[in-house]
Structures are given as structure tokens and as C-alpha cells.
Image (cartoon, rainbow, N blue to C red; front, side):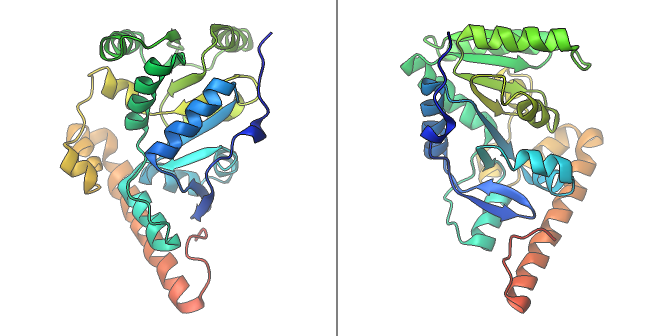
Length: 270
């Protein structure tokens, strides 16, 4: 029998409203410690990492926003999101909490502490390369299992089988590499069924498998990682970044203006 600790055993980070999205005021250290604590205690939880594009998309989709706002952690993945939290709410966050970097830190700690992880998502070849890379970097890491789902909705029987495989594996964490917003919807739909911490880590599978190069550190610190990715895939990403980033900046400016003129909370959805 699988024992699950009640969710209230974990004290999750407080949240602040950014255009209707409840963003967690958290750091790398706090996020990693809380996730590991939940994984050790077998507390089911859902964690996502929101970039500018994710915040804008979630903000503009009432159904998606309602679901994401139930997550235990919605971390500020992009530097502009962190800046917005600091500017609109005075949170004084020292750094963003990036999905791929959090996954790396969790794998390192899991290898040291014996917490097993499960990989769900990605193409079969990417998933194979990812497992090889993780085993090479973290020899003590316990990979409880991996599954590359088909590029179509799973049948109820397939879905039940996938959930059963994850739960029986004993994994404390499940990394979801399905892409946004599919991975967030998956996490929400399975939050009462998967007995582990689900982490929506986006492009982390491609990054850690060595398929997609990451931006230099200086670009990441300056909030320019989007520019690096745009140069790599301009036809696929131009609308996401150029349109999405512009909307984000306008929303921040309007929120600050409203706060100054009307003295209403700056982060409320506009």
C-alpha cells in the first residue's frame, strides 16, 4: 500500500497576483527544499515555472488560469516575471526560478538523498538521450521510469496504465516535458491520481539532453534568453516572444499607472 502524507503537512510559498496569475514568491533554495520534502513524504503536488509567455497566456485564458492558480508552486521562470513581482509587489526576489535549472538541482539532490524520479514526455530519442545524460551527470540518481507518450490524446486505458506505472514506480517526483500549456493541463488533470510531485519543466528535456543549446549566462541574467531562442527558431517563436513580451510590458506599465493614479493593487489583472 502506498502511504500519502496529507497535503497540509507542507507549507508552500505565499503568492502574489500578476495579471490574475497567482505567482509564488520563492527562491531556488526554497523551491528545491519544499519539493524534496514533499517527494520524501509522498505528498502529491503540482509545480509549474512561468515565463513571460506563460503568464500572458494564462492571464488571458480564464479556464487555464483557474487551474494553474490551484498549483502549490507557480515559480517566476523568466527574469522579467521576477522583475514584475519585485516592482508590483516589492517582493525583493534575488533571482528567477528557472524550470531547467530547478530540474538540474533536484536531480543532483535526489542522487544524494535517494529520491527517485520519473520522466514523462519528450520524443523517444530525446527521452533516451536525456536518461543517458542524467545517469552520466548524476551516477546515484534513481530513474524510476520514463515514458514518451504518443502525439495524440491518450485513451482512458492508456492514461490509467501510465498513472499506474508512475505510482507503482515509487517515484517521488515526475518531471513533465510536454510543453506549455499541455503539461500544466496534464498536471492539473492528474493531481489527484499521481502520488508524487509533478513538475512542469517545459524545454528542460531538450536542454539537458543536449538537443537545444541554452543562452549564455549573461543573457539569462539580463532577461535576454528569449532573444537567444528567437534567433534559433524565429519562424516558430517570433509571435510568442515579440507579441507576448510587448503585451507583458504594456500590462506592467498599465498596472504601475493604475497603482500611482488610483492606488489600487498593482498586480491585479488588467
